[in-house]
Structure formats: structure tokens, C-alpha cells
Image (tube, rainbow, N blue to C red; front, side, top):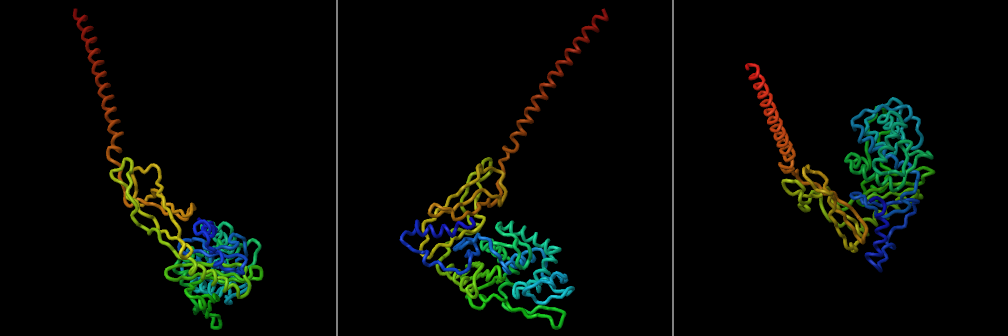
Length: 405
């Protein structure tokens, strides 16, 4: 369910809604690569070269931040290593041996795009820049960002440091589910604590979308000569979260590119809710079960359609074969598959609402049969033993009688 959604949307315009020229409403993006996704479902609404390898510049720090939040504590005291003080590009002037909290370093990295802060975080979490890069690549792979490779925590130029717009969307969607991350990237200004009186303590977020775009909630800017202008922009309106990624744009076009993508998502698409999490679906018999298995949904499912053109959506319940007791509460029993225009648009797991025990005789039956066979065998053996004793006694008695004669 990754990137076929955008193609499906465009094809559905032809097959489900003939005569409608929806493509004319899609935005024109200057950036070389771009993608727009629903932050809640991951559905792709628009893409342009979304799987082309690009230099990400400082949008890399999105991955750095989520790893730091997952593996560290905001209250951790980080001692700045020599590598951080020597880093080039944007920085807050960290000095070797200086101590800051991990929280302050994260704000410095995500607001002021501090390359030195990123290195300090990387060494603290990964032991070295190379060690942290290994963590980055492992996390990216876990998220399905398989067209990426990271060599440093800040996005400084490296031929082997690359990603795609699609992969950055996957990484950002994961990061935005972390409350601390969301708080950091939507902060416009912040003061951090540093012991040096002349040290920079005031941070100003470089992401102009926070000031200029209604509902903007993050995420990260980026620029190098090789990467050109890059931006991950997230916005929330009426309980809808959208994420736009643009790489390789030019000058101020980076802001208009992301604004156009977000506008397209909010104005040209509407979410249709099909089912909620934990909803009752049906009861199905369980082989050997004392009762039926009650099925409920393991998650919610919504889908974004072009405004006013939902089309017909079918759903099919597919159960594992066989459904047999015993069944544990929460055990996956099957899926609901949603399709539109003959194309699958999503799946929802079906879980057992409660445990179902196996019928007692199904458990005890083999034991009863076994016990009965054992008893029968014992009786046969005892009977044979008794007959043998009787024969031996008769032989002995007969011989004894002869002796007396």
C-alpha cells in the first residue's frame, strides 16, 4: 500500500468518474521530486519523481531527531565532542566539552538547523557519527524507506548520503506520531540554557510555513548547493494531517511548492470514513469451540477521494482457514479488504474480541480413549497372568500328588 495510491487516484478519475478532468487541478511543482501524503493513513495523494534518489540536506535531521527521542531522554546531559565543534555549515557554536541537555540540542537542531547539534546528538546516542549512521539506516529500513542511505546526522554533502521524497514521507509520518517531536517542530522560537555568557541561546525556526501557512505544524527545512532547496511541511486542519515533501526546488519556490501541495490535499480531497477501531463486525463459528468467535476491527480505515467523487467502495471479509478453537483475545482472525474500481485501497485486521475455549471433550477425548485402551490392555494382561498362574499351580499340584504315591 505504498505509492500506487497516487496513480490509482489519477486512473480512477478516468474509470470511476468519466469526463472529469481532475488532473488540471493538480499543482505544478518546481522541485525535482515531491510527494503529498495523508499523515493519518499514509495514502499518497500526489507524487512527482517520489522514488528518485535525491540529496536531502538538513531534512535528514528529521530521522536524527526521532532516533534520539526513541533511544535517549530529554533530560540527558550531553557533553559536546570535538567532532561537533569542527562541523561546517549552520551551527550554534558549540564548544568541545560544553554540556547541554538532549532537549536543548534537539531544539537547536530542528529550529536553527544546527549541524553541530546533530553531531553532538549522534555521538551521544550512537557512540560515533558512523555508529549513529548505522542506527539511521536500520530505522529507515524498518519503516520501509528502502531507497535511502545515510552517512551523517545532518545531511551535509556525501555521495552515499541520499533518500527519496517518498522515503522522507514515511520517516516523517513516523516522527509525527511522537508527541515530543511534534512539539519541537511546531515551535517558532525558544531560548535554551548554556553556561557560556556569550553563547547563542535564542533559537528561531527557519521554517517559514509556521508563520505563513494556516495550520502548519512543522517540519524541517534543508539546503546545500547540491541538494538545492528542500522542505518537509506538515499541516493540520479539521482533524486532518497532511505531509508534503519537496526536494531540489529553487529559491522561494520551495514555499509555494509545499503550500500548493497542501492546498491541493485540503481543497481537492476529502476523507471518507469506512470503519472505526474496535468496531463489531460479525460472529463466526469456531471449529471445536465452545462458542462463536466475535470479530472486531483492529484499526480504523479512511480514504481520501477527490471532492464529490467517492465512487463505489466494496469490502470483503477474508478469514483465516480454518477458524478453530482455542482462540486468544486479540488474535488476528482475518482481514477486511476494501476495493474501489477493482483496485485494493486498504485493509483492516479482524481480531477476536475475547478468548474462545476448546470444547472439553475435544481436549479429553484422546485421553479417555487412551485410558480405556490402557485399561483394556491391563485387564487382558492380568487375565493372562491369572491363567498362567493357574496352569503353573495345576502342574505343581499334579507333580506333588505323584510324589506322595
